[in-house]
Length: 161
Ligand SMILES: CC(C)(COP(=O)(O)OP(=O)(O)OC[C@H]1O[C@@H](n2cnc3c(N)ncnc32)[C@H](O)[C@@H]1OP(=O)(O)O)[C@@H](O)C(=O)NCCC(=O)NCCS
Image 1 (tube, rainbow, N blue to C red):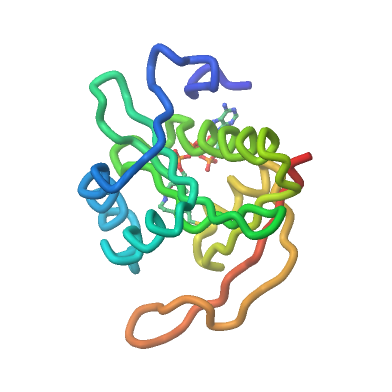
Image 2: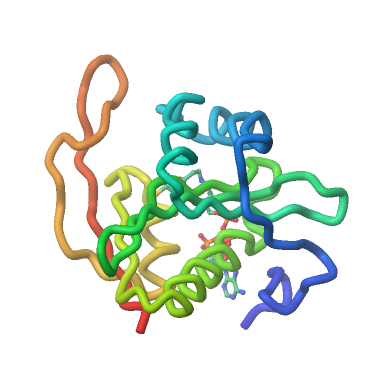
């Protein structure tokens, strides 16, 4: 494993935190900077009201660096949104967050985590694959794209148990 990346053991560098409505401005600042079609404030509020599992990472300065939202569906988590601050990418935060997701699923006896990702999001797809997610299908025209077009989603899943 490279020493360049933060790891789950570097707990003096960051801390995990559960996120709530008070964190919404910070979440939106990241979301709107990294996504072409970001979730709206209303999307996040719906997710909080539905008691989805929302987790973040804060750095030593207490700035929000990354977050994910998981929706429980019977015995599977569905990863709804996942992002790392544009200025803090490529340090290993996504890797740490994926490990955290898997740990949450294992502790709660969920069997798997499922996600959709844009076919054009080649970096995220490669990260998920390397982490152990497998492609299980495609959804045609799932996402809005530029100029009124639509884009396919790749559906991926990782076993948690
Ligand atoms: C996709 C995204 C979450 C990746 O976040 P990130 O923090 O830059 O990713 P990491 O730093 O953890 O990973 C960087 C690389 O190191 C690898 N890596 C990270 N930690 C590692 C570790 N401890 N050991 C070995 N490899 C590691 C990753 O596999 C990855 O490889 P790459 O640079 O060749 O792609 C981020 O770019 C993002 O927020 N994008 C916009 C939103 C988005 O697309 N979200 C996903 C939607 S489905």
